[in-house]
Length: 536
Image (cartoon, rainbow, N blue to C red; front, side, top):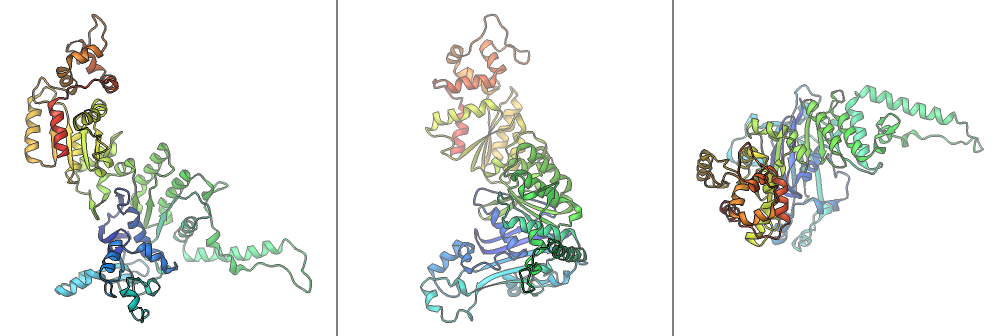
């Protein structure tokens, strides 16, 4: 199998420097807005598709890393001018056509380091392509004064694509079949032409494509001549200049009688994905940027099923903000972009990853992308904790950049396993269920974990959230919760009194009443402690 093994970036858009190791099959890029997910995909396309090759040099204003530009402006010189280096390391079957063309020494800064320390060895030779954008001093002779005036001479930059074997790279000698799926509402957008052309090239061998193009030209002329338009006079007539008609530029993929680009955006994305994943199309690498756009819940689930079933035939690199995509495609495949680095979740326990694959509703991605998090057991805590937080601190949870995630019971343990990989403060608020061993376990956990703490009632009498609230606010709650005289409100066959019993049997309804009430409820001490700890 041919695939992208790694990506090395210097000075490109978001990244001053960045190194990414990709999984052989599935890669899920996640991160906050502006974290750099699109930049990673753009870097790959820049190398493999020679993106920007024909663009005006003014585009470099948007490609240079802002930090490198600032460094140049602080100390303007030819040596400090911003530059771009992108290396894509590949894994290629040696039998692949032109494979040797891409095999050679590792380039760039890493090669220089090898040479300095005398460690460049045969095993440092790899398959790959290198893109470099740098100022050409020979071409820019006479620009020295402008450079000293902090002016970047974009027109004097040279863009080069070279293989690791130091051969010029041309897309016609592309080492693997590569396709980027981009959803657009504009049927004439270049993304359609690129998709259709790439699919055509990957699906059919050179001989088949040549015959199709030849037959198309021949029949096009025949069809036009068959119209028998009147001559213009003096032996002149209209004809078709076949040089102006390139088959690949007018190809469309049809489903029935409808061209793909004329489908709704959601179905367009789904169909593109289904086609790309077909083994017969021979695609090695598929890039997908936010495939959830324009998709209904049902259609998204269908897309995820297609990807899960067929992902082993291709390497998939998908950038997403969607929790379902990140969890259902297995969080072991997640590459989390944060603080300018990429962290893999491949070492998360397999059972934990499987939990998030199967969980009907989870907030895995919310945990990953939040600054601080409260993990609570259920809807009751989810509703009331923000109220108590503001009551105690005078600020909203949102103002302090904190998220509240409902974990549906003790599944918070799976979230904690993820939290250990994040270096985030995670506060668990849970019940002790009247069991001393749960109190003891929480105490032990808190002694050995500085960034994750568990808070619960400190006695078996304060066994659950509702019991703690009732014990502190009995008068107010007795007046608020309506009960029927003589009615039993047993909870798990136990009698806790009418009011508390009804609270336990109607947790969400009770929480909603408390939320709408103007009463300032006394907050249990362990909740106060949890809020204080997370804010610290």
